[in-house]
Image 1 (cartoon, rainbow, N blue to C red):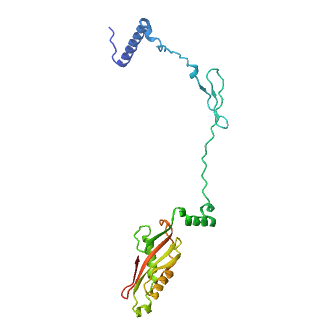
Image 2 (image 1 turned 180 degrees about the vertical axis):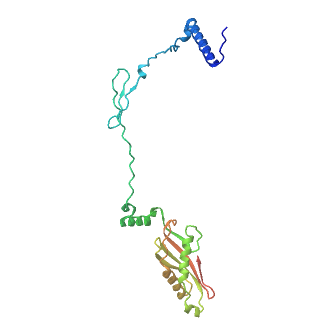
Length: 242
């Protein structure tokens, strides 16, 4: 009886493993050959849809184009028929408004003269010829102006020294007209003080105070007639309205 040599167990195990694999390969190859065939992918069904002629638009790939940068397009219908190149729209450039020069901004001497004449005569047609007011009138159109007239007269009105030494006292009433430019006209003595020296001092004070300030635009008259009363008293002298 031959004994099995157990000194090479690895070679024996390897040989048995190879023999087992060979038997399995032969079994599957002869009894199940379909498992060794190449698996093919199942076919994919594709449905072709034809586009409508009106929706067909073929654009030519851009290849630099012409100098204007336009690209030719194909019309629907006949293949290969190029569309007419669209006309380029001109760019709308807004014009920079020109600024007025120095000559336009600076009025000439003639323009200034005409403006002064127009200002001086503005509204003359709508103004009354003349209006009579007291020197102490409370009419808001004349109050400020009359205050300036009274202030100028008081600054030059003096009590005559000869009348003071003679203790002459009394009062007089005068009227005078002021034009729109402030000039004085029609100075009259309406009521005498009883002493010519005092009357003359009243008239002299009004003449010395003239010309007065020009009338303001809110004064609706061409000339203003003013009535004022002057009182001479050894204690106090004053001016007031009629």
